[in-house]
Length: 360
Image (tube, rainbow, N blue to C red; front, side, top):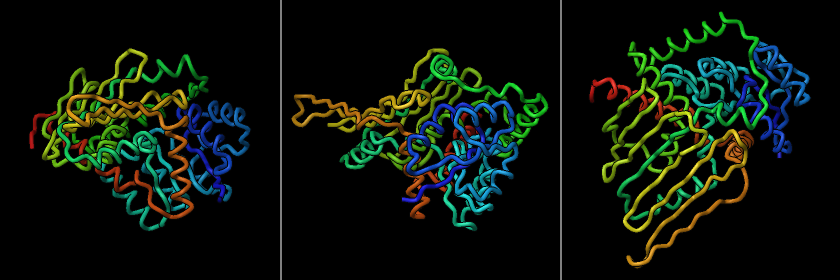
């Protein structure tokens, strides 16, 4: 099998904790040949830790390297679209962390660049690659009926898990001016998506981009695209959200939020008359934690059977990278592609419109 050379653009916590160990585990499929980060401290620390000699501060310098076949884009999300398009035009395949971009204009520009270049773009919604989730989709799609579905994602702040379990080289050498410019650019991109809205709605949209894209893209793969968003509400300055999605014969209830409890309360659950299917996730910042599938059912209306399956040790990020390798090697489009991600942005916009009281 071909071994692809990977350049990493953005060497922050997710690259350090998850992607670099995963790529090292899959070193028969990948070799990390170059790093890029605007923080000189991060670039030096990560490069030394992993023995990667080629280090650049400008992503264009990395894209010019012949020693790079494909890139991981894991820098701040406001730059994802710009770097993805540049990578495609530099003849590189792309695995881009979620969110792929911040608005539909950026999304459509990526789709066009992907068509022009014929290169692969895979969006990093890794939960969809977990074996438990894939098996749950198979079971759900075989149900005679669905009566109700729930998508729930209540988590503690990432730092509550990261700080006691991982060593991360911090980017504490960043100039304040750069951080300010990034915030301004992000605000402009979000205005391009949802207009000039109150701060709480902007916060809600950012949460959708950063967290809910996992949940709703998985919901769409399992259940299909909903007919419409019936209801959406935000509270606590956008940090807590609820919604209801209309699937015709049933409703999917959605709830999400971030608090101060160090845990991961995240699941998808689908209810039929005789069978309930549930997938439970744990934090991605501790590698190889179980992602489980629970099926509760009756065959006679009197007795209940429940099976809890943990389909082998492994990590959803590992399966995501294996899928990326298959797509690059065969040219087959990944399921988490730019056209697929566009559906999330459409749902997010509909949710924000309802949260604003505009209806629809």
